[in-house]
Length: 147
View 1: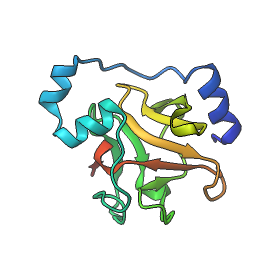
View 2 (view 1 turned 30 degrees about the vertical axis):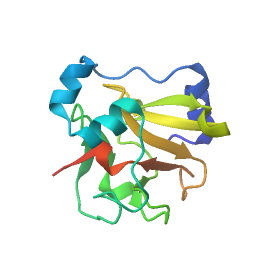
View 3 (view 1 turned 135 degrees about the horizontal axis):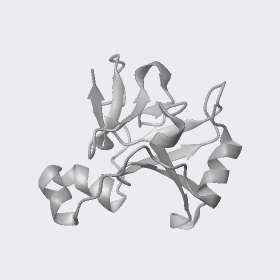
View 4 (view 1 turned 90 degrees about the vertical axis):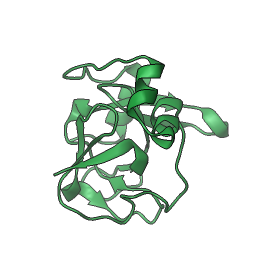
């Protein structure tokens, strides 16, 4: 199981190898995504807290990347963090997520991306519930619910 030390190791030394890669041009992504999905996933944007479709949703299923449909999180590990974004304790597979050290806005954080297509998902923090202690704080616009 991943923990904060694993996350920091990946952020500093490179993410695990994904099962597959999906690469498209900027114009191809623009054709596939809504303007808001493109802004968040391809330009590292963030949706307003509490505004996302999956913020309060507790439907059963897997949450996949809106860009490439790779399964990222399972609804069984989703929890209410009170932050205004969907939160998960761990990815569906260790290599589903990529980790990037983020020093924007005068902070040091760890950005999480889809490891298949590099779509920006959100950030991970070390203040989640046990057993992982992780909180993957994810933009709803980056996700699709796979039933």
